[in-house]
Amino acid sequence: MISATSEFTSSDLAFMEFALEQAKSAMSNLEVPVGCVFVEDGEVISSGSNRTNETRNATRHAEMEAIDLLLERWQKAGLSLPEVTEKFSKCVLYVTCEPCIMCAAALSILGIKEVFYGCANDKFGGCGSILSLHEGESEQPSGCPRGRFRCRGGLMASEAVGLLRSFYEHGNPNAPKPHRPDPSLSKARATVPRGDAVIAKRPGKKDLQGGIPTPSVPPEEAFVPTSQLDLDTG
Amino acid sequence: MISATSEFTSSDLAFMEFALEQAKSAMSNLEVPVGCVFVEDGEVISSGSNRTNETRNATRHAEMEAIDLLLERWQKAGLSLPEVTEKFSKCVLYVTCEPCIMCAAALSILGIKEVFYGCANDKFGGCGSILSLHEGESEQPSGCPRGRFRCRGGLMASEAVGLLRSFYEHGNPNAPKPHRPDPSLSKARATVPRGDAVIAKRPGKKDLQGGIPTPSVPPEEAFVPTSQLDLDTG
Image (tube, rainbow over all chains, first blue to last red):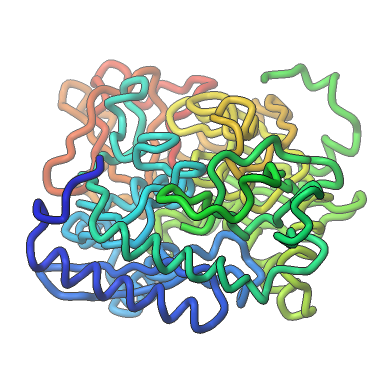
């Protein structure tokens, strides 16, 4: 799934630059920095960035933001559902982090043509890391009404990781104190809230007590930047 | 996953009746009849029905409609993201058809407590039929930031199937003619558009040409009502 930057075209790089700008915009709004753009016929037709904090909605990932923008526009233009699907079938998504399972399933339902992503999401990724929803029915029982789409990762991954690392190194001001582990309390059992992400190598078991899943992070690994980020916002 | 109706409480039945009313409302609007309600502390706090045709958005499943209604309300009330998650952790969803992979992932991200569904969605179901996203990290590598939720199917399944069967027996007026197989043309190769569903035992391979996945249905099996429905709208 991961490819060297040299394997991508200059257009791919330019579009991912645009997606990274969206991620930076998210970061300036104190959101986890993930961004994306949809491209049709070589033109950016929609963009989005993670807005989980602002909307208090943990599902408002960058992809969902950009998708809703597109759909609203196409609905206003009077396109029918098959016409919308036809439009999506020509769209390419550039997103700074691998789409999560929910977003990958949505992209499949909508019939996206192709996805390029930056860094992998090895905790919730739906395009190869945890599940391979982009592979459509090929991995499923025959007849599953999900669309297959092409997918390549590793496009400007270091830039995407750099943004996320920078965000977490400076702390997430929107993270409520009781859920935000204090690195200085390295002996304490660290937990993070849902909708937030931790840069850690191997988060431990989730604590489902109280209904809010709080992945515990082994103290010695909390906030150790790696190239694989634990995200549920991409 | 499937349980006899006698195993459910009278409250469960009452809430699923409400969800079925939403499904009937969808049908009256010429939408695929799938409906749901969210319940908190024994009270219905949100409801939704499939609106894929009206919105020209194949992802506007009943669950997403009801979720967005709830989130909008909680956002207006000024709840923080952790408070929203805390609220979801007390919510029970009753939905007439098994949540699809996208919806099940969204429910997991949001931290839902429990789901009761009617009929299984054996082509796109995310709660046991195709994937088991309700099982959270237990089936995934440790540390996956997805929440586990309880899930039971088979609650008034026959009623849910009956609605869907009735809808398809009368034909879906929103389905564009070229994609809508005419039952009288039983020898022809029948195809259905994305966002639509076919009552058939074993749909064949998908035709991804042209970008609109159109699961082909072996003629002899098209529109043969079964208890397992091929849905991508639940």
